[in-house]
Length: 258
Length: 240
Image (cartoon, helix red, strand yellow):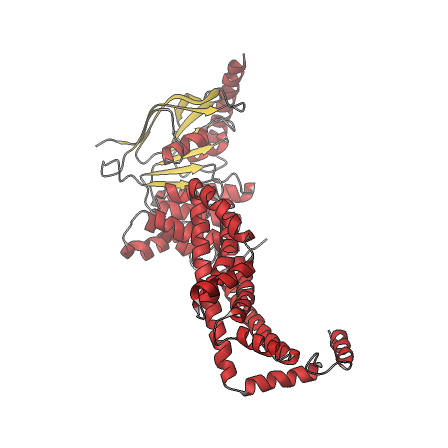
């Protein structure tokens, strides 16, 4: 049995250019392995192709060459469950909070007997106990995103993809959500691939950070963040790490432009 | 409103009650009509045809509209046919269906369906164009099968279009039903109108027309609108 949850092998993806005739490369022979149970982040500037990478892993975007494997706990490939928390909550507004989570459970063919228990467990976990019968539009943006997180966790995914999930929230809410996410992860321990443009967010949350540069996107640095979790947002070690990475990031960007 | 009633009252003074009744006279006619138990049978019969025609139009119209939205080939096939149906004179359908089906329930139902369902199709097809692809992607990632996608993601997004079609279709259906019945349908409000027309009794025609109109407006207000409010109660939940 493999220890990896995700294995990406020389993945390439091209997009047609604006003119239509030529194509430009978004991802070029990208290789990435994510060990089961780790929180990995990909950091890169906007438009570097990190969302595209997540969509390819999720199977909603095609790729041109290379391989993407998601390995289920039990070792089979077909049964791998993917949870996805998008930038916006993408809830079904006509369904109650509870039914939104049930939708994912039903989609994954998870037995009805465990639905009530899972709905309760994961709503409790994201701090939304008692909101089962509310409609999403009655909730604030932050609460809606919590529902989306509960929905993704409830299927107990083999890989949880998160695409800048806090970027649409105001900074105070986002900060609270990050801290809460850390605590949630003490209870549920999924493998997470988190995409962000914020180095601070990445170093605060992750165990592994991959830094990506633009056009074509490639991973130029991988590092482990060895500070034990849960962490404090004001931990000076995090600031130092962030500062170093920012410096490194700009030197790579400048080199790219020459 | 009161001004209008007053004007009506004044103008009616210059004519025979059978040609243009005053508001009070009209009310007496309505009371007369409904003091006869057979009036309920007549209204019931017409209403039954409207209901069957409406339900069929909604089902056929929504199904075709939905498939048009999902399959481009189907859309280009039906697009021109729907236009043909929409432009074909409504009155021709009323005549043709009497020729084809004779004096029966089928004639008005057929007429309603042929005239109403293209509107429903156009509306629902328009709705499919406004669907949120992000939600479909979400459902795909969570591996929803087609049926689940349809039930919980796609059709709910079409509900506003389906409801606006329903209310317009209802209004259309009952007008078409009366015209069609006037041409031949046996028992029905449409036949009453023809009968009183041939007897040169404008007061009775107005009596039937007005009572039927009141009934239809009540159904729209008390049934359709309330139903709509219930289905969309999740929207009122919006918070700043």
